[in-house]
Image 1: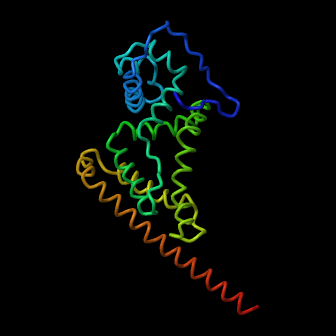
Image 2: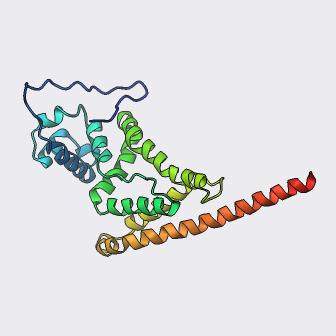
Image 3: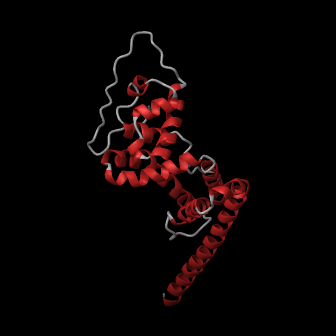
Length: 233
């Protein structure tokens, strides 16, 4: 695993039993275990999430899991971390950035177990400090910063005016997509999957229309303030 696990002085036990010389790990085990971990957690919650349950669902032996992860917290957060969890990227413009980010969320919701697991862990973190620390470090902080960079880049490019909170645009986008998905009944989700990309694009354009109005107002106010200062000079 490439993740750095040390958080605020807390370090999980990362000791791994020494393997026999020449023995190679099966590269297919980790993807199977990660998929099984998300599935087991999404369907059974933290109370039903165990190495034994994951090993059974993945079709691997428990020793294979114990050799790779020291505890359930590490396994669950690692599984979410590599599960194509939406991460904002620089695509050259604010609209391109938002469309790319929205498309990742559309893809994310094609796998209900992932979406449910991501929602469950938020509540389970409240009573589990180790889980909370890992989730914050590997999932929440880096992806929140990446998402807020969409607004920061747009300001630097001159696409929008300064003063807009970096969280506002992505909160509107992700909130709209998640609410639309979760408020749709299971029987309606097949149709939603077909329409979701177009819906996501429409939300991006609605948000940008509003942002442009705010930016124009901010710029006009700034110009007016500058003129007022010159008149008084």
